[in-house]
Structure formats: structure tokens, C-alpha cells
Figure 1 (cartoon, rainbow, N blue to C red):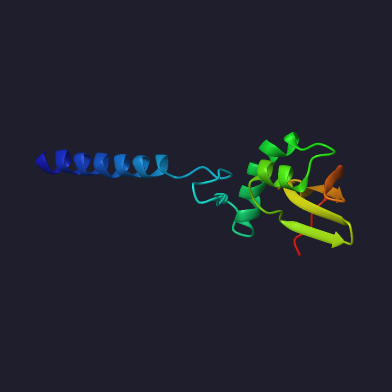
Figure 2 (cartoon, one colour):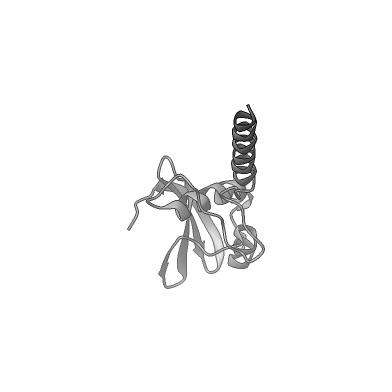
Length: 124
């Protein structure tokens, strides 16, 4: 009987410890104090892109035409996942839908937002 009580007590402590550890796991897609976005836990292929998409999706709607590059950078709070530049034109791409492989591109002309559009995203 004492062995059974001891076994049940140990099992309770072990299960309680597992639950406690699970509750302390940081949620993906949140930016920490050092400016790093937490990656997803479930995706072994590109966990960081998954975490970035969760974060980006929450703030991308604040971007609009005629904002400056500095305005966009302040809103997004991190560098774009992809960049393209050609003379006075530049575009920043942010992964905004990881599951559907979609990237939102913010196009700049002379340093201000000229258009915002979504395109399929490929990992390259």
C-alpha cells in the first residue's frame, strides 16, 4: 500500500512538472526585449519564417501609401525578410501568411510607399 501511495505521489509530481514546463513555453510570433521574433515550435523546416509571419500579420495593416521608409521600419520593428532595390525604387517583402506561402511586398518610390501587394512566397 505504501508503495502504491509513493508511486501515485511521484506520478503526480512528474505530471505537474510537465504541465508547468509546458506553460512556460514562449508563444511564437512575439518580439522579445532584444528585438528577436520567437519562431514557431512545430515547423522544423523554417520555424523562424513561421514566427515572423505571425508577428508581421498583426502589424502590416498599419502600413499605407505615402509613408516613409522610416515610418514602415518603425511599424514593422524588424528588417524585411526579402529586399529588392533598383535606383530610386525599393521593395521590402514580409511573410504574412506562412501556411498559404504569401508575402506582402511594400514598394517604395523615392523613399515613400507607392504600393502594397501580396504575392506567393518561395523559400530561396
